[in-house]
Length: 160
Image (cartoon, rainbow, N blue to C red; front, side):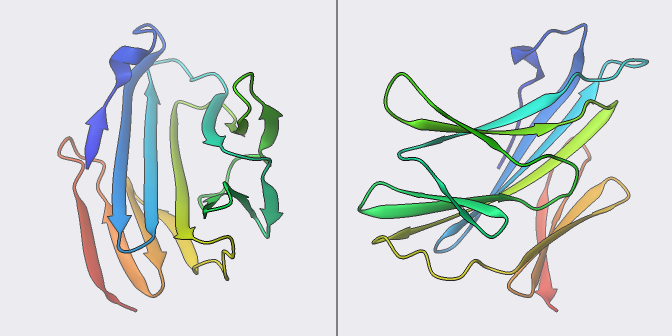
């Protein structure tokens, strides 16, 4: 699934803002965000926000939170950001803010893993690389290609 939502931002700053989502059954979601500034400009710092039901714990390079019945693990897998900042919200949840320096174009890749119970188990092996304008995400030996053309297709390759 992909959506263009640049209209949510100042048209003098953001030319394009596309989110691509890939659900990998039974328990993973890949989120690819592509942001592009208006020609001749750079984007300001970008924050990618995640709402959590409880204070998260560090799980390697990931954050993990639970509501007591299920868990969620989130990690950035494309280099370029800084460690997330965690803050309590007025509605008794917590917000993780992943920050990225401004550039003319930014690509962000985050992986969410979810499960029932409270034991998250080991994280999936995930890598992400930019290949030209495409982004290739490999999870558990299978590579998914996220296209940057206006159709923003996601295709699955064979196992590596």
